[in-house]
Length: 452
Image (cartoon, rainbow, N blue to C red; front, top):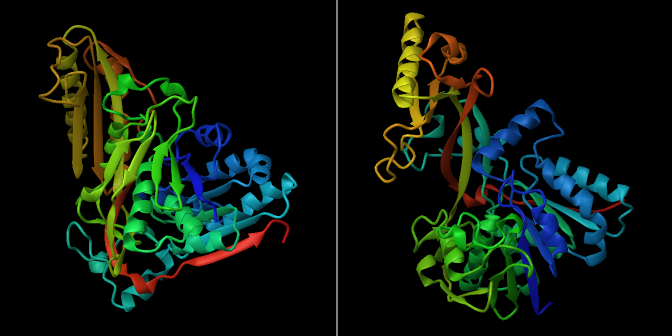
């Protein structure tokens, strides 16, 4: 057993910097690299991809990353844990195996953890008594017909720990918790017991999960952050005796202070005394953080309790269609002209007999983002007019998109910036948070060796 390990998180979401994990790998000593790709809407996107192509439904960026770094990962023995599997962990693993073979990698094990995707089990679970009551509205999922796009359980960390225990150097999961990506290597390395210890590992993961948000990204005092272009992604130095220090590679930009770490701790916290995960319940009010040197913050004192008997389920469903269009209106009286443009669009659509379930308009440049807080100029030189509609009828939404461009020649003067083409209808993916019995899901762990 190692006396300490360095765990760095190189992705905070699917779309984060593709260079960040490479800089994390090559920027200094590292034992584990975790990569967090999944958000609620991401699961729906991946499910749609899989429907169109059974070989898709995972984070393709991850495969490109491991393909680039395989020789270094193999030589240095660095282990990677990523939820890049999305809704198709096997297909993601197969592409990683293909990349390993291309590089002639030998004696490496690749693990997958599935079991979170319950989309095809919904009827079975309904028959077993699961109602999937919406945690915000109290409505049952099956109270009316819905086109459900994805349904994934936030799985406990056990499955990832099992894969690591079986020797997997790369572990690909579906919907686990974001902090679980960091917690799993800690539990594998040190076999920590007790809910206080699990809670400490969970907090380490929570601090790392959004990538550079812990090292100066999105920081309130952004002007204090040096060399943000080369911002270092966060690393947790974890020791067997329970020490956790948040840091980054030396020589990289960014900032690790009590303040940067504190801001990340507040991210999606909810009830500070009752932060619920599948592995434990954490009391955030118990967390002690202190500066431990330049770009080093020590975390301690975390208290935890037993997890709940239920697991959270992230469900998404089709909730109609939307379209968004925008124009730049410039010159004298830009705001007044933008208002007139909006009135023209809505009036012309009514004249055509088209109305919508919901409409929205906003005028960027006159203080709408921070209305009442930031003073807006009385005569802005230009205004961005943004119009949007929502409706269950796709054809009506499509009709809206045809009314933006005509304003260039049939509206007031100064309509100069029509970019992005005609707005097209887009599916609205709505989120449905629910709970289900913990005993109804089991992690599906598989570990294979390259070449087998």
